Picture 1 (cartoon, helix red, strand yellow):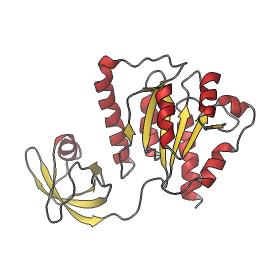
Picture 2 (cartoon, rainbow, N blue to C red):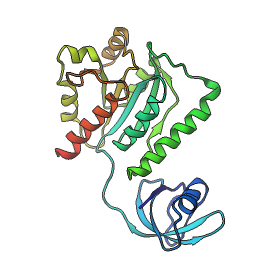
Picture 3 (cartoon, rainbow, N blue to C red):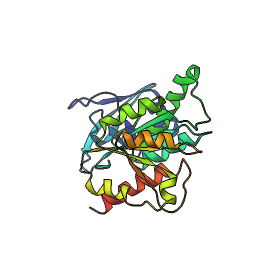
Picture 4 (tube, helix red, strand yellow):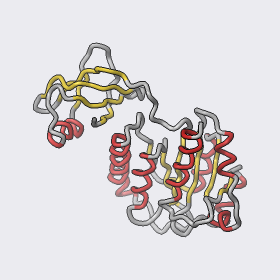
Length: 250
């Protein structure tokens, strides 16, 4: 069944009204009819199976049939901070990172970022990013849509890092030197409900200065195995490792 995020809070015994793009997708793309069923997710992250009761010319009404009880979210909140990469790599990180359970995405301007943020195109770009994560959250049956922030400076990123329980930064030089314990160390001690920020560089990686600034702020500097991963691959590696350690191994 298809999954849709609802903007309005659930009110008992009141049909849920769906309009806009979701209405179009249900009626025009999926060609659903009355009595068909979908999943709906409310702003409080509760989700349920709902039956389509009425289809009008520009809206439809559904009614909750059965509430979902199984959680679909990682036991910890993971924020992925990516140095702005070239092309559509960031969109790939958003899409696949959402499927793998990321809670938040924070792009940032790294010293080696070639792409520069264009304020004139900011709203259009953010709208696209938010649409990508919403669709990925629906596809992967998430109960939340991850937050996507506009790009921040590296200094702003360090300030934001203070709100997280664990802060990690991936660095290829650590991988080359054989470091392989810091990621496992952090995940072994992380408790349900805590938050983790993981920082990744752009194509050219992070500079030694940026790594030193992270160390000064208490970041754990991590290698991600013996192979050097692309900027769009490394976040997916870490999210997969988090899922394995905190979901499959517990």
